[in-house]
Length: 299
View 1 (cartoon, rainbow, N blue to C red):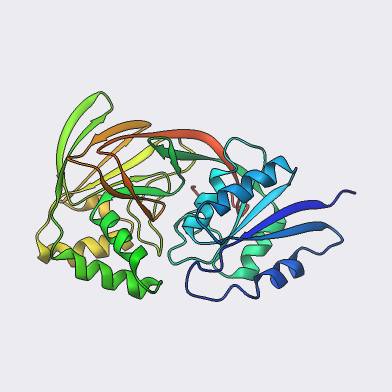
View 2 (spheres, helix red, strand yellow; view 1 turned 60 degrees about the horizontal axis):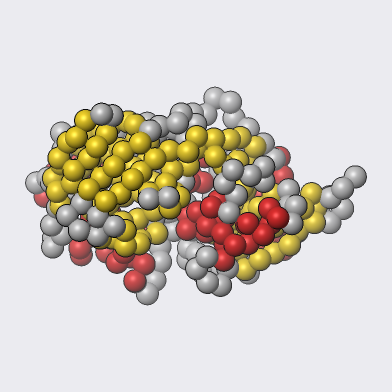
C-alpha cells in the first residue's frame, strides 16, 4: 500500500507559542508506516503558497498548514481548484477559519481530525483576484490589522490595545457599493465581507455566513455613538451583531466597492494596500479542506 504523502507547512512566527514540538507531534500522529511527511518552514512572505503549489505538482495527498490565518491563506491559495486538500493545525492569534470549521485549537485533537481525513468542498472569495477564505474588510478593522502587523508582539492582548488606541482618531469613510443590481452609498466605520462567520477569537462579524452556500455575507457598521461600543462588542461575540441598529447586512455572490482613495484593507486578517475600486466575488467549491465529520454542523 502506498504511503500518504503529506507536506506540512509550519510558520514558526505565527501566534505566540513555540512551534518547536510540532514536527515531533505530527510524526507521532502520522507514523512512517503509513505516512510520508515532508516539513517546510515558512521564512518569508509567499513561502506558504509556493510550498503548497509545489506539493500539488509533486503529487502530495494533503497539505497541512500549521500557523494562523495568514499561513492558512497562503497554503490555500496554492491549492485552489486542485484535488489536494488543505488540513489545518491552528496556531495563530485569531484562527478564524479553523474556529469556523470546528477544528480544535488543541494540537493533538486537531491532528486527530487530520488523520480521520474527512474532506469537503468549500467556497473561497477574491478581491481584485486576490483570494481570501475567511473574511476581508475595510475601514477601522483593516486599520487595526495594519497597526497590529506593525506591533512588536502578537496575541489578543496586543490586538485589543491597538483597537482601543486607534478608535478615538479613526474617521469613517464614504463607500459606493454596487450589489444585487443596486447602487448604495454608505458612510461606514467598517465594511466586512464574510465567506466564513468570524474574524477569529469568536468575534462573529458575519454570524450567518456559510462557506458552502455560494454567497458573501456583507456587514456594514455605520458610525456610532461611543456609548454604544460595549453593546456592539457584546453582540459581536454573541453572534448577533446583525441585530444592532448601527449595522446593515446584505448577501450576494458579487459586489463592487468604490472608496475615496487607495487604502489598507485586510484579507484573512493580513493588511495590504488595495486600490480605491474593489471587485469582490465568490468562487463556489474552489478549495478542499479536511474538517471534523459532523453532519449536524452548519459550515
